[in-house]
Length: 157
Image (tube, rainbow, N blue to C red; front, top):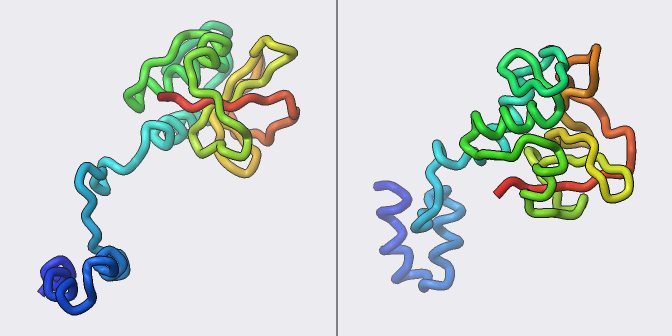
């Protein structure tokens, strides 16, 4: 007998209030409309993996991949591969995202570096204060610790 088959009999003994607890403990909770395991990987986590897979790709101003990237070209390419369309430039990408606080940032959120009200760089948040990005001419796509506090975060919708 599976855990789900036991839930109806447990309901009559334990009451409906604890049915979700029983199902959750058994690891068999089913929520209508929830994503399955295969669907659970988010667009953001997919984009993060795509960016990481481009480690070592050279920077080229205006490039959007698949072999060379500028900063916003890397984020555009990564999210496109994950199923979301972004505008071309870092500023346009910032304008298109849902702005979030640093305390609410999650893996795969976009990280925008700014000077005053102007965004000049973008990367993908990888956790522990690090981003995947394509830094500048002569450099390559890499994981790097954030080097400034002039940062805004955006979530791709």
